[in-house]
Image (cartoon, rainbow, N blue to C red; front, side):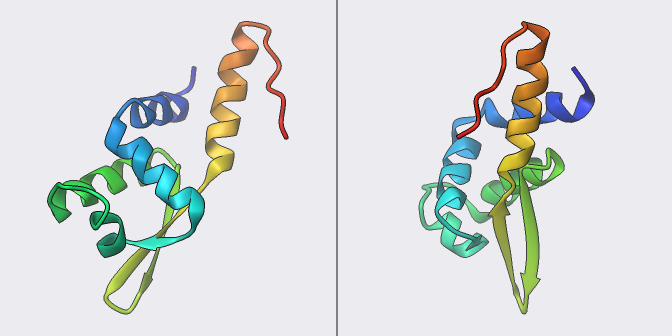
Length: 94
């Protein structure tokens, strides 16, 4: 498994990060909006978002003072596909 996929699976192993990805699945969101869905500090959410960004699971765009994040689902598909191929399993895409 390559380093990028290791980062992806490590990022997906955390409940807060997977919940953030579920929120981003709906639409692009700013940090303030994401924080409103959790009972943790803004720096903590920013740390999780940074880990998701380093793993290639989200992209960030600055608009004025806000940073907006969007899901990059192809990264998940690519890494899962690579891992499944190790076990001769084909990923079915819908």
